[in-house]
Image 1: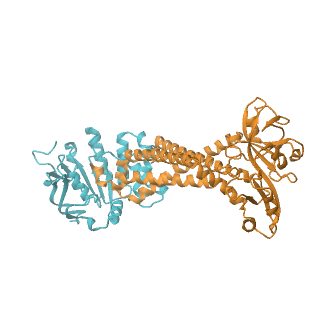
Image 2: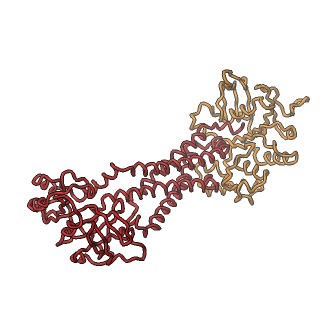
Image 3: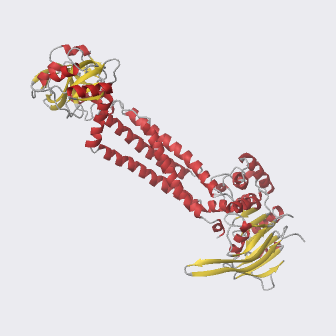
Length: 237
Length: 371
């Protein structure tokens, strides 16, 4: 069996709310294997956003450790952690968060440019990914000139352009109808899932549960289900 | 990001351009007005030493000396030549019957030292004719209507007849008062007064002695006050700074220009950051460091700043050029230090407002992008 891509041990996270300290994650242990499409499912307030933030190195845990491809990411310096994210993790945000004033190719090339690659070379690489996503002809358009679906594909291109080993995706189908949602998930499965890469998707869209390799259900800061499908009663909203 | 948002781009360019225009234009007018305090000195370029009573302060604030002072100065070793110079106020009744306050300047009868070198109309030699006065060009526009030729006009100067026979190309005084040049002996007739009426002795240092050394010698041997040309010009400027509200008024306007720049640019910057905070958060999550984000914004803000600054300076040049024919602005120029000062102001505005706006980006947690 492969070594886990992500190893989460004893993760807890507290938030201060006025005088009160609220614990939103309670000692989570979890391994995510490479080549898997993993869903993180749970109701609002269940802690899934906090967990995914900790797993991808953008939110420090109160307790516990996270190893991503063998690196204890919270043992790294701030600078090294930022650099680790830049080289190893791809992000697809729910709102896409494309930069509105630069074209699609430049948006998709952002991680490479941030790594120091020449802008033109980065755009060329971005165009290759965009070609695979069938949006190469939109490369020179501004985000405002693209449809929602096209913007999402640009966001996917941005997440994959630097060939990360972990892709984190936040509610990719939340704003889409059933057909579009499935097409996006098919696309993600086709271009993102690879033998040496893990893809974690935060969702509560039960219409796409059948596409997951693994589904983790989070309730009140604890993993209550870990399987290839949802339990009989379901956890859909 | 910044340059791609047209509204904010033009807002920033306008803010910087307006601020630069206000600062550069006001400082330019201020400096030129201050220099008018030294115009009486600048108009006499032959003399490098001015000698006066110990209480005299500027060309216009002077206390007359006895005529013997001229010989005392001439007797000081190192004085190449020395001539008398009279400056006094008088009243003129114009052809229309209006009363106009004027400055009467009596220049040396023989050498005409004290009369500006350039003449707009007539020659310097006209002063050899009796009852002659030469009027300064800016004064001529004040005293005579447009289209009227002042040459040959008769004036009633302190109850005496004076005929305008020339127009001098002179730097106007701080108050732009009409100036009438005449010979020293003629000026004594025009300006009634006390026993002592010689305002200054204009002198030239001989070869081998500096004006500064000569002033020390003159002061030591005559007990009079002696100033080099540069020192006396500075005295005139300092007098305006110390005795008028002009520095304060212009200073307030310059500060307002700065504040307006900070307000417009700061507001536009903060709107830009607020509108793009999610994008900045996303970039931080992806792995773009604060330093890189700051450099990215700084580069674009710098570009916007340079465009705005350039427009502001061009606006000032256009203003000065556009008003160059107006006598009030005669001889106005933009000292090289003024654009540098406004450039520094623009740099401070951009840095200060950019830094304040970017603090929100620096404080934004990358995890906020998932919320």
